[in-house]
Image (cartoon, rainbow, N blue to C red; front, side):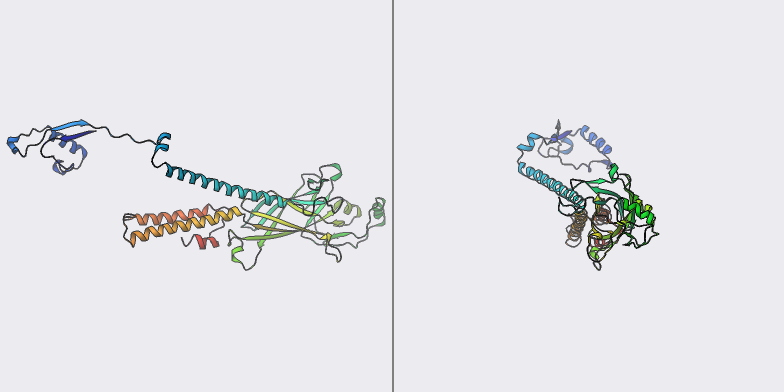
Length: 405
């Protein structure tokens, strides 16, 4: 880059655009005109001694190089402490965020452990052989309001804490017919004498038998013969707390609470076939456990074996109650989105009022106000789309955190 310096009594001050001929404003015309001006000879006789133009002197001036931020300049700068402050602040924020995510992960692990808990005090056994229904969570569809669970039969090992699949050894393979949503009642049907003698030969009593209330009811599956035997069930869910909009399914997102239930009963299919009595020889299942998890949902269960109740006959079924809610991670993300939306809206509101009402045009000028508003109009709703497990538009979170913004 070249800089022209003029030495004389008076310094020539000519605007760049004023010396371009014919009103032209192009750089090419300017360079050509300026070159013509430099090559023109001036003398004092034409303009007088006081109006004589000085002789231009040309010299090269190199621009200052861009300053690069390096290790040496970082620590030797006068503003080193502000830099250290914002670096430490960023690291603290990242550490806090990671800690929050790890806490949510630990909560999910603890929830799965509670679902696998057999209940009762360890070291105590109610019988020599305890059988449990083990469910594997497969899918929860909030639109259909249905939970899909795959069930298999397991038995309690000798350590009183491990569940093993039925049919894994020769002595644990049975044919148990599983019935769903039925009632177990006393079976007053008589067994043929020749068939009763078969049971007596094995010291098996034929009195006090139980059966499924509907003797023509087919089972949903026959489990226990192989360790891989399983059956899928769809369990309907509904609102857990009545007259509470905050816990209403989908509408109360992310605080909605769901509930569902299922009833199981088992029949020894081999004994029923030998006695020639359909759906007879019913017995109770000791309990149920859950394994695995569903994304964006926390599903828990409680089981109740009615065979354990003494006194008046209460049936002999396994009642399982489910409860579903959003995990803390989903609730945290939803509330964070609401806070971000409101903070963004408040910031845009302040900028608009300062520019339009207070006249501080250096903040927003001309059509910048419209640009900010229209950008926010399309940007803020996109935050709602990325919410985990978000229902269709119309939930209570939309009325509070999306529509007003």
